[in-house]
Image (cartoon, rainbow, N blue to C red; front, side):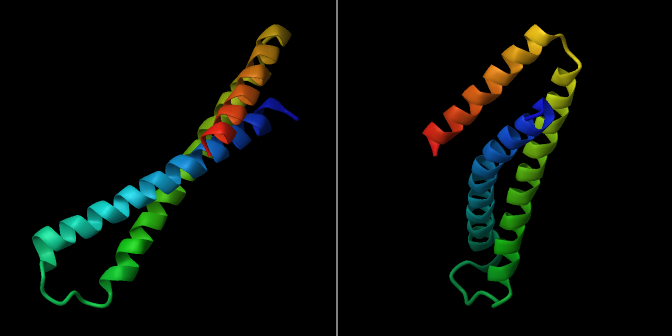
Length: 104
């Protein structure tokens, strides 16, 4: 597998994990801020739920796309390096994938 694809996979894996965490935090923050500053204990409009959920999904997808983009760029940079550097970069990518698997 080419280094740019391997690092894009690493970026996607970590982006998925971090994106899910960022989406959850965004939803929690939006709901908390809405409760404190906008609606309080009054009846909330029905449209708030889908808007807050959609905002969280957008943030999660942005973090995922950022991880894939960063991994692809880093892998592309390593492909033009000497053989020894490529070998170290491949080992680092596999270690990052192993760490992701151990984290999940």
